[in-house]
Length: 328
Image 1 (spheres, rainbow, N blue to C red):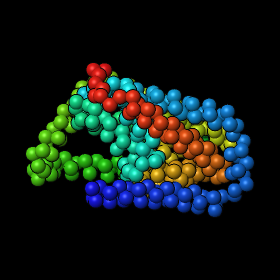
Image 2 (image 1 turned 60 degrees about the vertical axis):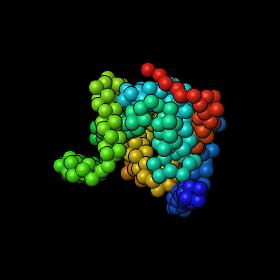
Image 3 (image 1 turned 120 degrees about the vertical axis):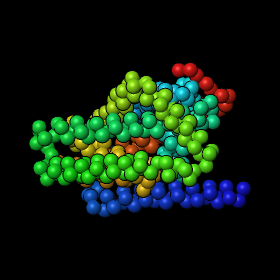
């Protein structure tokens, strides 16, 4: 019990430090950006529009529940919709309000691992779902880079730097994967039989997903659609704040800012996402205060949505704790 209490205490200290870090990042932005235009931009967003965007955000996440369930069930998890919704909604809440380095995935997996007959399938499916989300965001970035040069929106030096960075990262990843593949037998030989059995289950679940390419393609398309909806909602809020930019610029900057927020520096990426967006949109002439205003209003949508998701997850948890198995 003492060990558990110490672990819980460390977890809460972690979440406090990450919220403090978020406030520090936002404080630095407010220090270097004029506050008056920021306040005026936020005040331009009508309350009905805020709640309309919030509704769109929640409805888009409903599609996210369907996508997540489809992918994990393709791996053999066998979860019904209610359990999938509880996992997904709990993950949204956990990303913002629970002490975890890897965010809401811990909460999302906790229920799925407990209520699925094949826990390895839940873990594998969740990893595949995350991979589809990342590739969807990367696809939006590439689309933005493809469209931006046509409109002469990307400075030549920025385009050259991005191309060089992409090549370096790609080569590093290929080399790392090559080394791990060559050393796989030596690495696994030192592991226990129990660990290798778990790894075998993961490989079996991964094969189950790979045998259903239509699910992967549909999951990627849904992920791209979901991220595009979030991008358009952010751009809509930005327009009300007085920031009007071509869609190609948003396609380039918004996914990169979201990927930057994945770094476990602040709780839920708060502050990091806004700082990245300000930096990424600056070369395109976007005023910093307006970018930050749009980012803060969008952050309010995310936090409100996370609270609603937590309430939904709690209601679904109380609604039934019996195993929820489905063949879908």
